[in-house]
Amino acid sequence: MRVAVGPLHDADHAAYLALLDLTTSGGGLPAGIENLITLPGFDPPSTHGPAMCLSAHLRRHPTPVGALFAAVPEWAMEHTLGTHRARLAGPLSAATISIYGLAVAAEYRGRGIARALLREAETRARATRCRLATLIHEPHLASFYQRMGYTTATQPTVLLPGTAMLPTQPAPYMTAVKPLHPTVRLQPVPGAPGPAVTGLLPGCDLPPTARFGTHVVG
Image 1: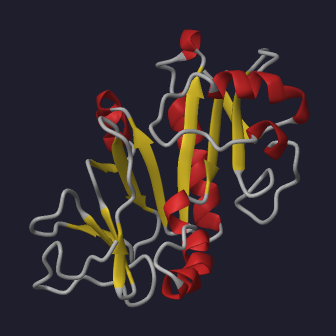
Image 2: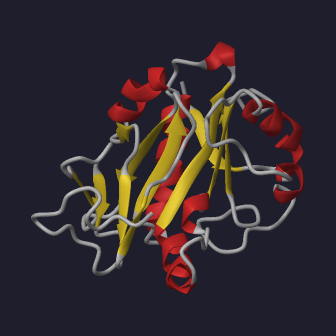
């Protein structure tokens, strides 16, 4: 079965939103998405405003059968740690992307459509030197994302210069992370509820003796 994946077309807005209504990720979709998808893309990999909106089509099928919505993760834009964190917002927004919604019409599931959407999103992100993909998912989807190269955990830690971030999600959801650049790695940290993402920004390596709680401020 041939699947064509590309940026959302204007004519497919209603079908795209209906597909995203099927998603149940703990991260939720941003408010005002109906208006956001009408905007031109700001900078690649964005296709609509600050977001990446992709749809999947089958040959001779008039409407999309799959949808993906991605944007900069909220934890990369929050400034709860003051001016130090504010200085990191720009580099973080360029280095990370979060999949907020991935959905396939029920009658077309199991045919590789979700995989095609996810691969296209990752390809577009890598082309702009994005270094890390993240998403929140239900526990029963862990094996799917693991097959796609993601590491799933209750709580991964993202190391930043002088601090660390813990992307949060409501129970029982899980967070999945995938390096998109060879310098970004996942390393275990004693006492941490998930792996540590290292190398996302310069100076974000893990000290050999690091323990959870020693270097983590977030």
